[in-house]
Structure formats: C-alpha cells, structure tokens
Length: 151
Image (tube, rainbow, N blue to C red; front, side):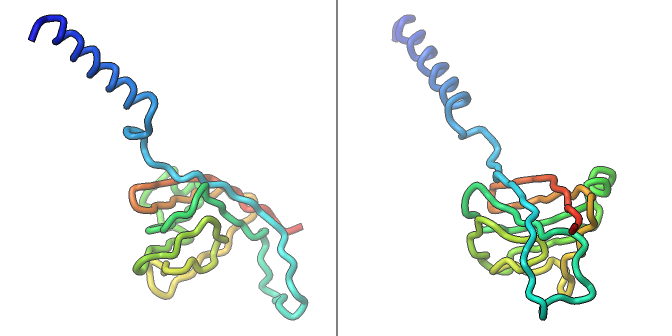
C-alpha cells in the first residue's frame, strides 16, 4: 500500500473513533433518569390510624420501564459520611422483577423482596434529604429527594 492509502486508512479510523465517542452512547455510562413527587393522598376515614405518617407519600418516576435488580434509600448525611451505612429501605430482585416506570416509597414492587427478610421500609422523617440508588442490569441511577411534612 502506498503512503496515501495508509494516510486515508488512518484518517478513516480517527474519524470513526471520534464519531463513536462523541455522537453515540457506546462509551457513556448507562444511567436511569429518576424524578420524584410528594403528593397528598386522600385517605378514607376508616383507613386512618393514630400512627398516621408525618410525611407526604413520595412517588418516584423513571424515564422508561426497568426491571429493577436492587433499590436502596439512605439518609443523605449518613450515606455521605459512610457508604456502608444501613439503608432505611433495601429491596433486591427475588427472581425477575416486573418492569416498572413508577413506584412509591415503602410499597411492594412486584418481583422484589427485602434484602433482609422480615424488614420493612422505615418511615421517612420530614425535611430530611435522602439518597436513592437503583440498579437494573447494567443501568444505574441515583437521586436525592426530601420528604415533605404533612400539613
């Protein structure tokens, strides 16, 4: 091959590499887009208890449907000081979890179970920032949220 042919091959490989890095998501981490909302939920009079929650229910939404493998929630201060802190809510996939696009804090997600059998999600404290971590296969997502008090 002549020098011109080698030069064209090198330019072609360089342009292909630049295209793959800058214009595709082949080399980007696979992330889950997460958002949350705190909503008042109407509770029937016969469902009210004296142990009523002190925070509004928190609903999480995902950018698409994901088969979650693991879900953890920590108070943000505890997680920042110690990444091995115990989560207040920790679920793992029992077998194949159902693909979900939204879920509520503390509620069951089909196909998932508590990481430690017999445990439940701890109640959220008002005006405390929490850190949510999700894993669905090779996709991961993290999101900070704050529990709002019931007015």
